[in-house]
Image 1 (cartoon, rainbow, N blue to C red):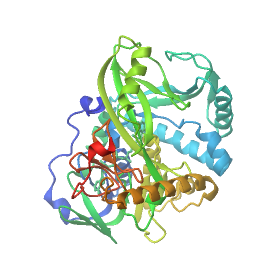
Image 2 (tube, rainbow, N blue to C red):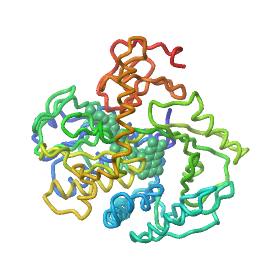
Image 3 (cartoon, rainbow, N blue to C red):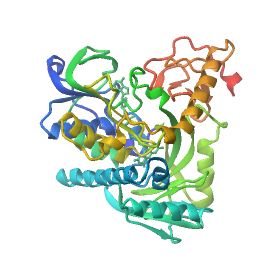
Length: 455
Ligand SMILES: Cc1cc2nc3c(=O)[nH]c(=O)nc-3n(C[C@H](O)[C@H](O)[C@H](O)COP(=O)(O)OP(=O)(O)OC[C@H]3O[C@@H](n4cnc5c(N)ncnc54)[C@H](O)[C@@H]3O)c2cc1C
């Protein structure tokens, strides 16, 4: 379903492909033209590198067109969790990196005078029951240098026990922004990468070559090396754009189990929630639940748009930005944005710019894919391994549902979106087996799935 952003910016596409692009040996090829790929390519181009972006579909047609586009270093109760898991120093660098990303957006938007409704606002975490958790997060945020405060005053349509505010965060209209930035780049759309070997990139059209290659395809599609399929899973969330609601100032994110996300986008109020692991459904209820909440708090509201998206959730709660693996010195990756891919994409762009230009970067170590945060990862790792074993068994049983073309896990029917979803790694297919979301790279061949059985 079309998002509000796509409705605002229908024409976001690259110009006609220049056939000469294929003949060139590039300094850098970036795979994927979502927020991450475009920003990485732009930062490298600003440094004088010759960069080509290869995109399987069209610019921003992946998760980026279905974001809620809050640009913030407030990523849930991140800092109390990070301090506990990886220590205060790494948590401080994580905070600084994300704050720097907000400033970098502002710099670009000012530089090109982009009219993308960028505005600095306060971001709030709120709870209806857990004041202490909010106060802990404020303490942790202050420890890592964030301008955080506690308040009981919010513009939410229901009472809360409190909210943790971070000042000077931002929101914008992402596709209008991307249109300006992408217009300065060489982007080849409808060019799907099917393999990478040394400095060669094989696509459905032809073979390209570059000194350095960056995989910014949301979920890295090369299983080995890297093993990202063992290090993260995907989670979906749903969004309604409502008209006829009272306007709210600030961006809100609920930390309770059934917490909702709110932000104003022009005339529309964006209401998000109903999150779940991709492939694990509880009947046809994700949009319905959101709509009921909307009607409860804004009886006069109307639904203007609805959409959903998913993101990669790394085990230790930190994105993977840097070298793809120990064994691939010229291959890089940016993934694991945990539904905070606006700042994370910019952090990736700044780190990879410096890494590829052989400069030191202060935040590089925290995000390095080669890090070993064993204690922080072990719980989620075991849970994911369990899910994968269960998924694989379901894929093997002959009467079971269809198998994912990625690693053979059993698919489940998603009644909210009429799709077949993989609970192991989050690949998705439409009812006819056409690929919707990676890491799988291909359509389902022989769909032997009985939807009624699943329902
Ligand atoms: C409901 C929801 C709300 C969100 N709201 C926010 C928010 O408010 N703030 C925030 O910071 N983050 C938010 N996020 C997260 C954010 O939207 C994502 O992290 C971000 O958009 C991911 O960008 P990306 O470039 O990594 O991926 P994508 O936008 O998916 O881009 C990847 C691109 O790679 C292409 N591709 C894939 N495979 C290949 C291939 N083999 N060859 C060539 N191209 C390929 C795809 O077609 C796609 O265009 C939200 C996420 C969800 C689920």
